[in-house]
Length: 99
Image 1 (cartoon, rainbow, N blue to C red):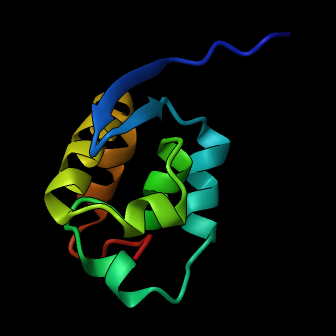
Image 2 (cartoon, rainbow, N blue to C red; image 1 turned 30 degrees about the vertical axis):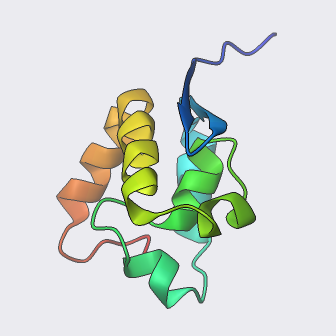
């Protein structure tokens, strides 16, 4: 069976950013993959940079080269596509389990 993927695109920092609606398996992967990137884990209140690599087409290098204000735009786009994931993170706060 073919998968239906919902994608929203926006140009941010000169890059075409595509945010996808994550599957339940991808959300589970986020909670299973806990990295050692203190800055990437804590720089933003809403999610980790590693989460954005799953929710968008951006690489670690892409995100590292972006300004925080640009990443905020990426987070906003990811939130539009994944409201359930971000509501889950809010329910887990202040623990922020993925961090």
